[in-house]
Image 1: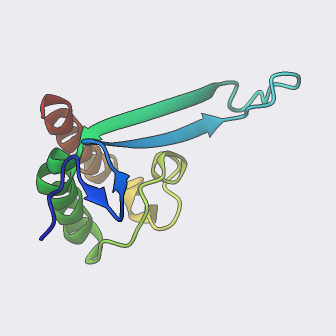
Image 2 (image 1 turned 180 degrees about the vertical axis):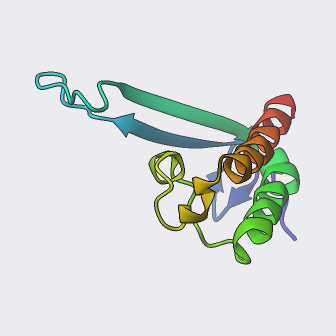
Length: 112
């Protein structure tokens, strides 16, 4: 198995970190969407070893526990609006459990 952090493959040197970038909202600043008048650009930076050994297993366990598979994408909009595949979250208690477990993963991620 190859080294996770800071490796070199075919002469290309890779760093110790992996970066995920995503946006939310409307990037059009000339005509603001009154239903969602924000634009957010977010970054998550993980040490590769932490991502592979801590983050991935916990997110996979979370998805398997709630969906029975790990192929669903955790989109904020669909979760917030209880849209498929999150339609089952219409119960306040169930949604609270779901969000608490997801929040716990994020908090653990922030500590690593």
